[in-house]
Length: 352
Ligand code: B12
Ligand code: SF4
Ligand code: SF4
Image 1 (cartoon, rainbow, N blue to C red):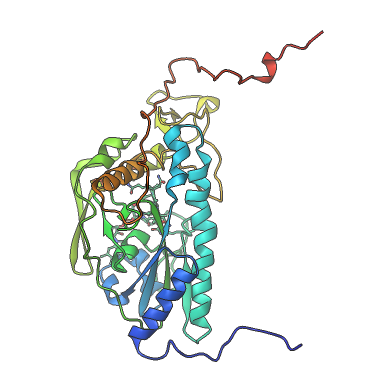
Image 2: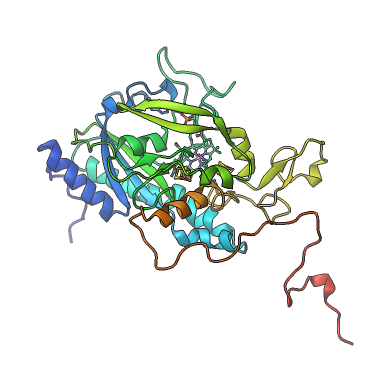
């Protein structure tokens, strides 16, 4: 039997940009994206140099944005306070470092089979040349030639999702999709293929400025006195200024304390102890390269999802409401009370 390989003779993407866009979007869904939209490169005009797709691919013409849902079930264990790892693994690292790359790579291969270059991009944040606030990292990397960005570029994926017409950016700065609200991750492809762009999102209003995200944030990370306003693709988009450092600390379950702590008493990040939103004595280790997100399924994401579900604006509807019991808080000032039947090894009394 002759060797078999993929079909490199098709050229249905070379026709008109509208048909090509339709074919690409159908393939994206078939490969596992939950929704897909296209933005033309002109919409990235004004992007900071370290976040400019043209710095990666100067001939880029289109960006394909894809939304990947975080299952509502991945938030369940944190809602009940008993199972935290599922959000970090299946709802976070597993999506960004495993599931999403597979879809993005498969779609890129489909485009490259027909001779158009495609850059598959998921999270890939660890190599970025800027910090959380957009400043260059000192002594990290240098431009390879004048006029080029310092490696690595980091495209803002929430902004990309917005510019591909997939939804809104909420006051919480989270990207909100009409299917899942804040419950999603984003992957993109840069390509030199011309595809008909989708209009920016113009559906039912998703963020109603309810402020549930702000109230639910355990780290008080939203500076409600400050708004960030950016012109994206001709639309003025506004969100509340997020204190990045506070969020990076709080979202792993840590609470910073003023008095210096010896190393062994620290929760993990800086001078911190577990907050009342973490049941762990020490910050749990990452899963799938990320995902120490203890508050991730609890704070702004959960509050926003509940708000949107109660308003009936999300397409992904459930038969039962998410919140079924009272919310919990860990009281670290008191000794723990373990459930009946839970036994530590040193409590076992050997029978004679
Ligand atoms: C670093 C990072 C963080 C940092 C800092 C966040 C930040 N700076 O916004 C911290 C730890 C705080 C964080 C927290 C969270 N994150 Co985060 N994070 C990222 C990451 C890796 C990079 C973001 C980044 O580059 N920031 C750098 C700063 C400088 O960007 P910026 O301030 O937003 O950009 C400004 C300018 O650069 C300019 N700009 C940027 N691009 C462009 C383009 C144009 C055309 C123009 C005009 C301007 C412009 O606009 C801004 C104006 O001030 C992205 C992945 C990615 N590649 O996008 C995920 C990502 C944004 N995070 C995500 C998630 C889910 C979270 C958390 C929910 C995590 C959790 N708890 O589970 C929280 C949410 C907190 C919140 N309310 O926003 C998702 C968002 C999904 C969604 N639905 O929105 C992403 C997209 C990861 C993914 N692959 O899906 N995150
Ligand atoms: S919780 Fe309310 S204010 Fe915050 S992003 Fe969601 S809808 Fe907007
Ligand atoms: S991810 Fe957690 S700590 Fe960060 S802004 Fe949202 S609720 Fe606050």
